[in-house]
Image 1 (cartoon, one colour):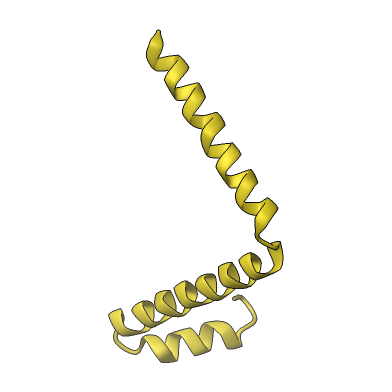
Image 2: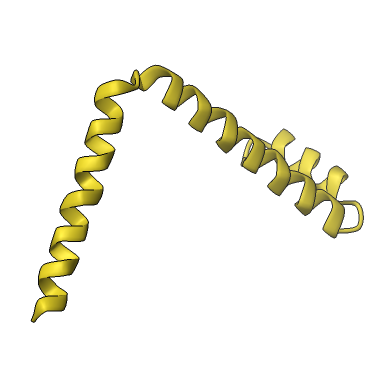
Amino acid sequence: MIERYLLILLAVVLLGSIGAFFLFVAILPVIAIAAVLAGLAVMFGLGFYAGRIGGGVRDLIAHLGSGQG
């Protein structure tokens, strides 16, 4: 029973910490950093895909050029 109260308290503290963070930090830089990190992850995934498959670059260009991607 005490575990449930501790879990609820932990959730409240986590949400409070996130809320306090966004009170002191503007949202635009956070969105910009998230967009850059997402772009890096996508580029890593595309590079992994192209390097894993033989002729993956040609397949990727053909897929993107066909309008399906």
